[in-house]
Image 1 (tube, rainbow, N blue to C red):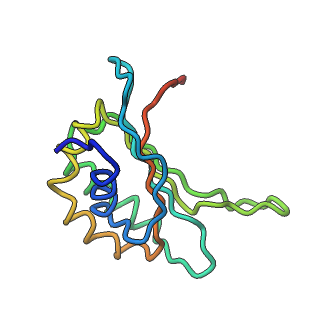
Image 2: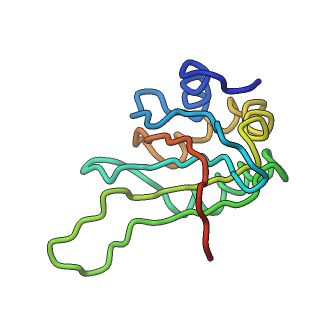
Amino acid sequence: MALTDRRDFMTAALALGATGCTFVGAQAAQNTTEKTMFKLTILYPNTPDGRFDFDYYIKTHMPLSLKRQGQAVKSVLVEKGYDGAMDGVEFVYIAICHFTYESQDAFTSAFLPHAEELQGDIANYTDIKPIIQFSTVELEQS
């Protein structure tokens, strides 16, 4: 299944467990080259009453997600909101996850067959409504 319009992106976002989420930037790659990657970013806002079990997320959910999606995932990066002592600074997101794939089709082929299982696991680590961002990587430098 290719994501060809906003409805397809919303279907994929809902499959991610993003019911009620804020949905940002659904745009298919238009100028694809061998180096352009398709990226899924999931942002979990730092809410006053939100629950997020980072230990479960890292040790259970992410390994499950990576196992199910297999080699389609070219890279994954999980960030934890910095909670160090910085006067007057609060982190906006408690967690951010970035997945990259070779293409939009690689994402849909890898993720959608496992969407129900992965969505079912979300309640085990959070009650926060995520923000889902689909994008293309236009520049990357390490």
